[in-house]
Length: 329
Image (tube, rainbow, N blue to C red; front, side, top):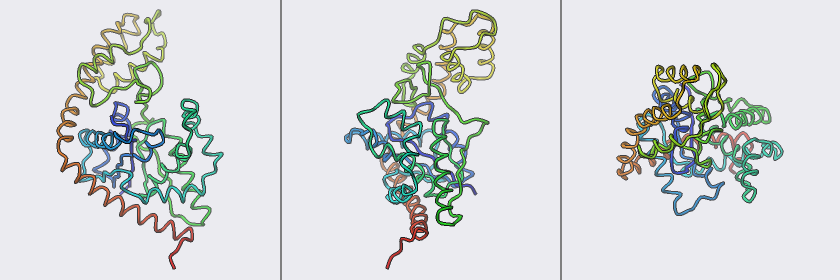
């Protein structure tokens, strides 16, 4: 049976990019694989979140994942900081992570460009901690979005490097997993890039119907095609990407034909898109509120998940320490 690991930073809300990316894949796989799912509160510390709301953010994300379909009776669901072994494994792996290699990662260069006042060591070693998250459970597959491909490739590099340096065949190289031919990248509403909280272009599972309709109607488009078969601009292509995720094929075909015939009305497309997103999000939002109200259930899920995750991680850490020559007297 394959082992699958997936996680998300505790930023407080899940958006459609999370849902249609790794989370949806994880939900599908949880009955067919040994699955670990965690809320990455350690990773969130790189951006210095307000300590007064960090725990609430973790709680919100946990409730949203459970409401979206993760089942604690078949998958291990835990909070990253409840498994202290991952921090030690990250430190040990960092001994084989050259600084220059870390500085060349696309995510690091992007973060220091956007936030030059907060270039911390945790940000630099983010890929190493991510590798530890995955390797601690000897994962075979990792449901990741397009933007995380490089980090996953670095995890494979660390696994190979560890095996080669110590002359062992201990870590396997985890593969990206999805249910299509390409990893999913859900666009935002601002006309470019991916959907994300920091970009302010997201649609969230906790959004009200009114908020969803308002956001979609304000989404960036263009002035419309001027000739039949004209290539779509990036903003319009993004709207069609969202449409393909939430709408019936006949709906997508209708608006694609209208576009190709230069007859499309973006207002009509956005209204249809908004209603189809509401149909997806509304039942999940109702379940979120029910889960958040059940404190006993949330405590039980995290306690059980932490116990299972620590057992798995402790076994790996003990073996890694032995391989590296760290032994007790």
